[in-house]
Structures are given as C-alpha cells and as structure tokens.
Length: 124
Image (cartoon, rainbow, N blue to C red):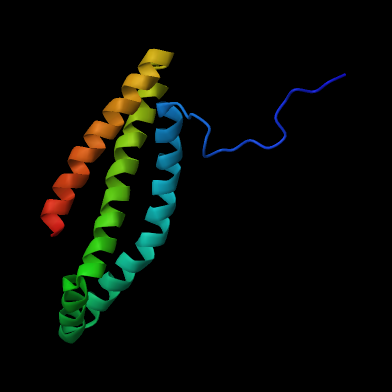
C-alpha cells in the first residue's frame, strides 16, 4: 500500500488561516508578558527603594533600548488583552462560526494595531 502523506511538513510554507495566526500570537504575547514582567518589576523595585533609585530608574527608562523593550511589553499586554476579550466574547457563543472567527481575527488585529500605535506614541 502506497502512503502519499507528507513525511515532513514545512511549517513556514504552510498557509495558516488568520484565526490560527491570531491564536498563536496570543500565546506568544503571553510569553512576552511573562518575561517582560521581570523587567518591569525590577524597575518598580528600583524606583521604590529611594530617591536615588527613582532617579536611576528614570535614567534607565530614558534610554531608547529600554523604551523599545517597554513598548514591546505594553504591546504584548494590549494584544493579549484584546485577543482575550475576543475569546471571552466567543465563550458567550458569539462569533463561533467560520466567518465569525475570521471577523473576530480581523477585528483583533485592527484594534490591537490602533492600541499598539497609540502606546508607541505615548511611550516615545
């Protein structure tokens, strides 16, 4: 019997549906939040130690690299929040169809992009 199934799937060449991509990025944003929380907690701890620590935290936050990292963490938070709200809405039975899933994915991307751009303007 001849087996025509592929042996190794090339996941990069695979055409992922938009709801799957938004689900994967939702998980990635959760990981970024987990990692980024350590940096933010360090800066919070430093700023609360003393007046000199607050000045040092302010200086650290003024550097472009740290601003970028903070923007990435805030972007992950905003995307994770919006995608999580989409999942909550789907838990109520809204948007569970194939078309609803596509529409929800598009709305998640659009609303996240607007929120992330606004956060970038606020941080920079």
